[in-house]
Length: 361
Image (tube, rainbow, N blue to C red):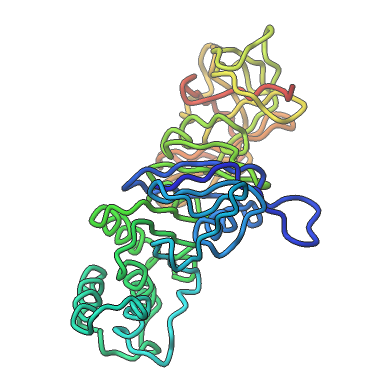
């Protein structure tokens, strides 16, 4: 289990903190992903857990043991925290074989040579590299280097695994394969795992829970499916995938959580009211939830009309950019009869798949 409480960090010369009272808890066996753009504080949070950064304030517990406390002046060194870490660069020693790279964290632990060999073999077998134990490290592919880094992280049998963008140096096809392998490995080992990435697909595919960060704070935290389908914050809606934000005017005096209606340039739509951060209200829905309909038909709530501005065949989906006045939306739908630019269409969106972000308070 990992607990971070009110972590604060300001780098020398910086005008604002990179961490602003960041708190989270990772349960045993859970993959908890810190997601966000560059500079949001996710890697600093991870390095603070590892002991590679010293926060200015806060507290960190690993398996109920305090490893950092600004108040109590506790700061346990990284090698005493019982963690395994995979860096973005992998940090493979080029002058060592695969086995010697994996054995490196066991140095100075008082283990017999036989015990070291057993642990290295077990770790390499876990990541599928046992037959490459004697291969020189420079003779490895990118995916094999990543597996060596993973084996080295787990060889000392840590209780906590920290992964800092471990797939960012791989090509798209290998990255997809390694996502599946990492997920299977984590289920097998059951570590409490913190995964840092800026890639929303990785976060959605690997995580039990996601913490989306921006400017040193956690904007939203929760189940990745729920965060994608029903974001509570407009930044979450925008960051986790393609999104439509349509200017609108909400009816009445809505409260957050109410099912409300709003007038948009395309028609009248309903959705759950969420707190926004812009001066005006905006209707949100994802492109794939909109259903294209014939333009003819009676007007109703959650049915809008527009004209096709762009039309693209993307293989598995059709992408339509539709406009009405200055407003534009994106729709992704299954391939069907060809549509032409300039044609009028109608589209509908179920209320449970949309939200109306209210003006900032």
